[in-house]
Image (tube, rainbow, N blue to C red):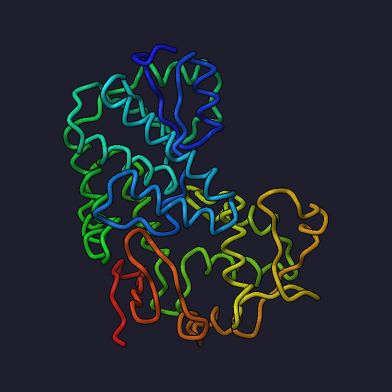
Amino acid sequence: MAPTSPLHITNGDADAKKVGEILGEDTLPWRDFLHDGPARSGLLLEELSLARVRFISDLGYGSSDSILVAFQNRDACFTDALEQREVTCWFEEDLYDQLQLMQVLYHRNNSSTGRPFLLVQHQKFFDLNPAGIRALHAQRRPVSKEQMTFATEAWRAFVSDTPENLVRIVHKKIAQPIAPFALAALERLLSEYPSSHNGLSATQQQILEIVAQNNLIGPEELFRYNNLREQYAYLGNHQFWLQLRRLINIDNPALQLVGKSEFRYSLHDDLPKEEFTAQQIDLTHLGRRLLANKADFVRESGIDRWIGGVHLTPQNDWRWNRSARQLRRQES
């Protein structure tokens, strides 16, 4: 297609393929799970992409060279589109999508372009038939100044090395800042900080509760049950396997496998499916103590995790109090 034709930015490949085939126009999948791993402040788009490439390749998603090429192609297409194309953003309600949308709008707001930038708002695009996609496309609206301002403020808070501004944004309760889903997504992100009660993130808490209710559960069933607990499910299956690895493949685990010591999964289909699904997951003694709020996961097992620009370690131990909806840094 001509370089001045419209471009549609989507959360990933499935929606990009669907939107592109139905509308007959170019699409750009954003492809990054920003809720996990470093996203530090003060970086240009290309610099942040380099940091994300290192993190994603270290997780085993592919070679750093192949992932780098994918990010470079994405960033170049996006940068060129800012100057030459009408751009429409298609992002859904969940945390995965909303962080991507904030990043896209932040970089659009920091550019000098005057090209149209539009937004489609809907909960799930993949479930729609062609008529539904065309109807949403017809209802797209220009991103307002207020939406751009919110996205810029939210993204800067996300990449900050402390989370206080993110909490302030959630507490403002801004009416429909980007889409009706943005504040709920950011609060879901805050709940991934260790709990003030037992040091578990909200996802870790859910996982342990499900295992407690379903003894010797398999990983795929556990993944399905966890998604049912989410208001807006945001974890893909491979991201969920990473969550299990962080609970099992550690020195002082909260979960264990029957007859095995290490949780195995494959990003590249080199682990036989029957071997993967046959793994049975159970609580450890620590896991039971954590569910009873009689132990603290960070103190027992440590932490080394990035949430945006915040590097969580035992020395930088931020805790989320869900009932008070507050984050506080633990004193050393």
